[in-house]
Amino acid sequence: MESDADRLSYFSAGGQLVRHASGDFWAIFDREFALSGNVESTQPALVARSIDVASLPKEAVLEVGGAVYRVKRHEPDGTGMTMLVLGR
Amino acid sequence: MTHRAEQIVDAVVDALQAATAALEIPAANVFAHRALTLAENQGELPAVTVTFEDDEPTSEFGTDNIAFIDSLLTVQVKTFAVGDSEQSVKLSLMAQRRQVHVALMADPTLSLDFVMVPRYGGAAAPEIDASTEAVVGSLETTWRYLYRMNIADPG
Image 1 (cartoon, chains in turn green, red):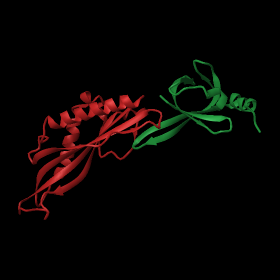
Image 2: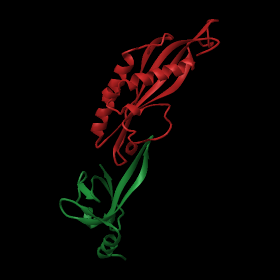
Image 3: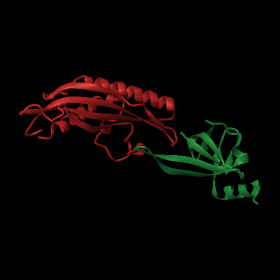
Image 4: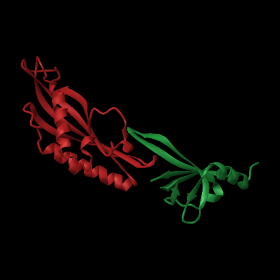
């Protein structure tokens, strides 16, 4: 069973450092294409350790790779990982 | 000479293109019969699209006259807005809705002598989608134009 320390090694090896006012954390960033009706858009999201992001409120401002996003919602998977769905 | 229904749609497009400053959209972003998707990163948003809807004769028999046909054309005008919040998108959509109304009612018969009566057909509820990176919204308004065409040639 992987530990939080194991997960940190995965993210720090292949992820990005996300900057937040209360501290930085490692995560994997995705920005998939998304269609909203007739409008082309994207759906940015971060996958991170739950212990790193659990205290982030909605609308928390994050800087990822020089771009700024806000947290729209948390999607924890119950095994120690959380997807943060982001918006502008 | 195109079908008079098409002339009406073209005139609606022209009226909206003349109002892009008031609509706060780029001049190139008034689209007729747009089937392709719209991309913000291509400069296609905010935008307005104009499409044909039903075109129904006023007579249940198709015509009551040997010389002409009167028909009621429905035109759909749809505005698109993007923003950072639901509130800002709704405000943009309602502002666009007002300017569409002002633009189309400035010349109710669209300077077409075969258009008799323009009618406001209402507005649908705004559609807001906050699931993507930006909040995206759209709002449809319906306009109906009663027009007359020659029974032999609708152009």
